[in-house]
Structure formats: C-alpha cells, structure tokens
Length: 498
Image 1 (tube, helix red, strand yellow):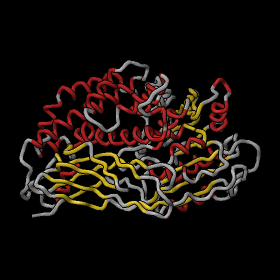
Image 2 (tube, helix red, strand yellow; image 1 turned 45 degrees about the horizontal axis):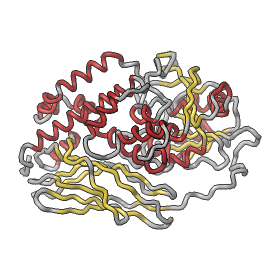
Image 3 (cartoon, one colour; image 1 turned 90 degrees about the vertical axis):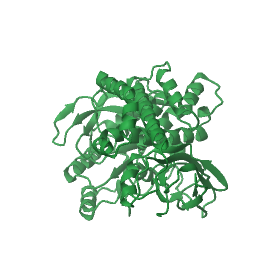
C-alpha cells in the first residue's frame, strides 16, 4: 500500500534575523490510505503549535493524489500558526510537522531548516552610504522588485524615477531570478547612475518575499521608503508630494504612511480609468478595515523608514500574501495613513500583473455572494463528484481555495501584530485600542471562525463597501469549504488505488 503523501505549502524562509519572533502560517495537505488526520502540529524550539484547521477541503490535492495512484480524498487539508522564536545568530531552527492519524499512526516530518543570522552591520545614521547623493534633503530608499520586466516599460519606469523633482534617492532593485537577457536589460537601463543598485536573486522567491528582501537593504540613513513596480510610470513630483504629506504640509502631519491616486493605463498608454480608486470603496484609516480589505496600493505609497522596525521580518507565508497589505496593516497599527486624491503616476494594467485594477463591483458582486451562500449546500454536494469538480474547477477555486488561503494569511498578519504591537492585544486602554484588538480577534486562530467573520460583517462602523464585500466572500468560502469537507468526511477514508 502506498505510504503517506504529504504536501507542505512553501513559505518557511531559509533565514531569519533577530529581534522579532517570526510567525509562520503553515498549511498543506496529507493523505494516508484508509485513515484521516486526527491531529496535526508543528513543534519548534520545544513548543508545540497545533493546527487549528484540520480535515479542511483541499481541491488542489486531487491531481497529485491521482498521480500517485490514490483515490482522491478532499478532506485532507490542515493549517495553523507556529512561532519561530528569535534566538542567537549562528543557530538553526528545525521545525517538525507531527501528524496523528485515525488508524493510530504518528508520523514526524522535518519541515525545513531556518538559519538564524545577524543582520548586516549598518553605518551610523548620519553617515551617507555608498553612492547616496549628497545634500540636506531627506533620503528616500525606493524598493523595486523585478522579474523578467518588459524592456520598454521598465526603461520608462526608470526614466520616470530619474525625473523626480526630489533627487536624493537610491533605488534598491531586487531581481527575482530573471533570465540572462532580461537581467542585461535591467543593468543597461540603470547603468551610469549610481543611485540604482540592482541585485539578482539566485532563486525565484515570489514578489512577497522579494520585496521583503529589498526592504532589508534599506540604508540606515534613509528617512523614507517608497515601493515601486517594474512597469509603472511616476509623475515627476510624486516623491515630493508624498514627503510633504508625511512632513505635515497641507494639514497631513503625523502620518506614518502616505499614498496617492493613480491613473490606470494599458500597455500602449491608453487611459483605462482616471482613478485607481473609484469612490475609494475601502477605508484606509483603520486597522479594522485594512486587515480585511487592503486599500493601500504598494506602488503608490511612501512611508517612514522607522516602520521597518515593526514590519520586518514579514510573516512567513507561502500562499496568498501581499507585501503592500502587510505594510499597510503595520502602518495602521503604528499611526495614521494619509491619502492624496491627485494622480501621482500611471498604473500600467496588462495581462501579467500579479494584482491589478478592478472596477467597482457594485450590486453584481453582492448578488453573486448571496447566490453562492444560498447555493452552498448544492455546491458542496457537487464538489463530491469528480466530473463536477473538473467542470467547476475555476469557480470552486475562487469560492473555496482562495478564501481558505486568504484566511491563513490574515491569521498570520493578526497574530504578528498582536505580538509586536501592544494596542493589538487583549488589553485595550482606549477606543482605538479596542478597535485594533477587535480587528485582530476576527482572524486569530480559535473556535467558530465563521461566527467571527459574520460578526465582523454586521459590526457597525465606517469601514467601506470593500470591507463588507471581502468579509462576505470569506464567510461564503468558509461555509462552502466546511460543507465540502464535512460531506467528504461522512464517507469512510478511501484506502484503495484509483
């Protein structure tokens, strides 16, 4: 009989640096012939972190199980949060995944090795670094992630950065393993200007982890940090306007992060929309709103470099996670976020965007969500049929697979904020602290996640339509996923070959 088949979603980083503990949102699926998971946990540093989601539906596991000759079992997923403690440099953390099966078997699987290293030594804060342009104006570190960029669009972005009226900046380009031809294009487009500092990764990390690595290179004398995509175009006064917002011009003083609006254009430069945020459906001024539905687009923002002390290292996640969502949550927990309604550049929308502009969904989205929730039992029943799963693969991924991954992501964000920001804990001294604690409590691991999502959905407060849309979508996905897994568990665990 085949042995246990295990898939652990990637996300555990190979290296961490003190001082913060690292929250790891571990997830995956496991299949053992004739048995189902009774418990799953990660052990690390002498502590045990049990999985809070067990026997969840993982429709993406079917193909691998069939490939290995097993009858597919949908109720094979698990997820949870583990804390990798901040320890001394030079040591290594070796988490172990422990699986307990209903047939009495216990298995221990190595989950990887994480090296603990000392952060790179930084120069004194009043010492310029490398080719940093001289001057008394604040230094801006621009973190740009690249991967096989379109040469023409990349050169246009580089030229728009060079044309900034605020000229004291460095651009930290973190290339995520582009092929040789695209890497040569990057070097040629940035040659002759020491403010551009391109570095090429040996392996592809994905944009979430790649931006984290770029932010780890921010020099100590940088006062502000901006995020840049590889194919947008900035207005000449973009940096100056965002710096003014953070420094207090125009009544915007005291903000930790500022972001502006953008035009949306296609690859040929034709205007798709004069604004990226039609009506600004989501609120950017509260952690409660941002943790559920991010309104801060990374390529449109600039934040104080001091925020990196809270944001780094990113929570360890391998499924749906976005760097700008995490940074926005950190900024909302740390202070205030300012929004500039004027357009500060062009967002280039094309087929290869990781995440792009979407028009306001309006009532059509609400109708689809209501219909999905009403049809949840029928969808869960249809998912038990292999033929129906093939025909409904796309909708089932959007309704079940994607919300499940998003819940893991938000749980890791919430737990990390709870540990790093006192106001996000259980003790609340002010109304703002109470709101922050309620925001994180919605997603922290624990019983009845559906009830907490429903409570967040009906909770009063000015959080925007996007908040309620995402809350309804996650609740609907959770309901369909739970019903799908429950129906699968009603049958004996399959043990035969396909």
